[in-house]
Amino acid sequence: MHFLHGDVPRLAQRTCLYTLAPLMADQPARVRIAPSPTGDPHVGTAYMALFNKALADKTRGQFLLRIEDTDRTRYVADSEKQIFESLRWLGLNYDEGPDVGGPVGPYRQSERLPLYKEAAGQLVASGKAYKCFCTNERLEALRKIQQAEKSKHQGYDGLCRSLTPDEVARNEREGKPYVIRLKMPREGDIVVADKFRGSVSFPASDQQDAVLLKSDGFPTYHLANIVDDHAMGITHVIRAEEWIASLPLHHELYKAFGWQEPVFAHMPLLRNKDKSKISKRKNPTSLLWYRDAGFLPEALVNFLSLMGFSMPNDVEIFSYDSFLSEFSLDKVNLGGPVFNLEKLLWLNGEYLRRLAPEALAERIYSHVKLLMGREREFADVPEEEQPKDTFLKDFEQKRRRWSRRLAELAPVLMRAYEHQRGMFLSVMPLVTERLHTLCEAADYLPMFFVSDFDLKPEDFAGKKTSPADAKKALVAMREIVGRLDFAHSGAKETLDAEGRTRAEGLGLKVGDFFAPARVAITGARVSPPLIESMIVLGPSETLRRLDRAIALLP
RNA sequence: GGCCCCAUCAUCUAGCGGUUAGGAUAAUGCCCUUUCAAGGCAUGUACGCGGGUUCGAAUCCCGCUGGGGUCACCA
Image (cartoon, rainbow, N blue to C red; front, top):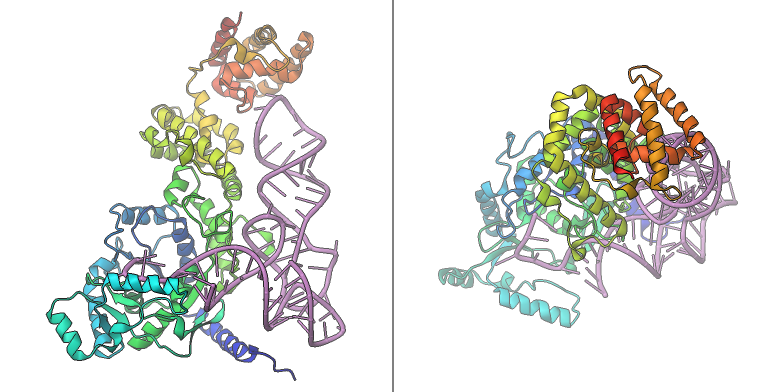
């Protein structure tokens, strides 16, 4: 028998959790996300929303949205609305929330202020918390000293904890502002359960008496969070790993109130390329960015579910429903996943390619509509504001250019979709496999609806071919096209075969023969397939473009 | 720095004591090809290190190292 080290108690705890787990899995879970309306809706919020919602759906429970707007200094007016919209865009709908209501509302913390005040008062009355009159100056000075001394204990020293009732009363009479702090234990370890980790232990001596109620009467996150989670019947708190450090405080708060603590499950943090916590400077973090760039919501959700979770049999492309059928909290991988935009781009392309022409056309139409009138937003940005990462910088530049083009052409493209539906649909097969994002359609779609290319003779010359060669090829091509029956089912093969014959006759490589026509027809060297494009455009437009190019060349 | 978390290819990951360590993205090469894609095929690349436990460790334990998070009257 070997009973070594300290692993016996830990094992015992794990065993205990595991035996409880199956029982709990069948209970409907009430879960929530609690974002703050302080800026653009964050990709991390969507990530947490996904895993929370999955647990709710899996257990036939409820998923709620609560707005944590207790910080008046960081409040951003539009933010809340954008959170609603982004979650809806992603299909991560919530059962209860500020804009949909529910039985335990209000779902906005600024509307629940009396609750927190009362809760804090209750703790003061029961001796679990106390009023602290320390000034900001004192706190700052304290912090400075602690840092200078590299003191083991960082944080509030608990001075006001020992104030007599008389002193408290006098301070209050004098109108001194105060905060309410929780009395944290000072000895021993604080051990808290975490669904993924078994348990996490913190030395109590490292803890400080945290502020629960600010001097402006607003609660801190910690107080509001616990009061609301309890009042709203939250059973599982699935949140980001950055919250582990406040686990002891939350645990002590539940204890102080005498409430049952929810199951905590701390998910890994999404990371930048350098492994640091995902951030605006190093990665697009705004959900609005992903929508504007033309990512499909289902692809983004799929991608997010790949962060820390994987399906059986190496399946990587799957719907939310199939994700759900396999989902389980204990399949979550705890290593911090790097958010890899390149892979998301690939995945989005996969989704795009699986869309039927009608569906793709509709998505492109909606996307163009979304960008309409927003040209100025997509103006080039100065070098110093561009991302440092070369891949991202490059993509961002292209994305701005694409978005600008789509925004400019929005009226034309929307009219085309509405009034030339057949033509619009027949273009879809030609662009679909070239797309990774919807905005990339800017490179392939417009040529079918506008022909104002600004071309010069040099544009028709190749590496080894002259404008004169180009002219010869174009004239030959015009001849072929002029005779071609566009309506015939074999038109493509005919044109291809005749083109090859003529190329040989002219002593040109097949590629060099078709290249000038490509420029003439599509306005670019890189384009959708030439012959198919001509067929979609029809004989008169094709000839018009060829003639114009021929006229342009000497 | 204190405390806490984490650790399989460059990246996302499979693996839960016995595998030629699998898949995907990216990269490279070839094929297909009128451009660009998409697609097909192929190649290289990983169990951080050191101790245990065991007949046998990527898998279990400990230590180290590395990375990350957190140390507010912000969330």
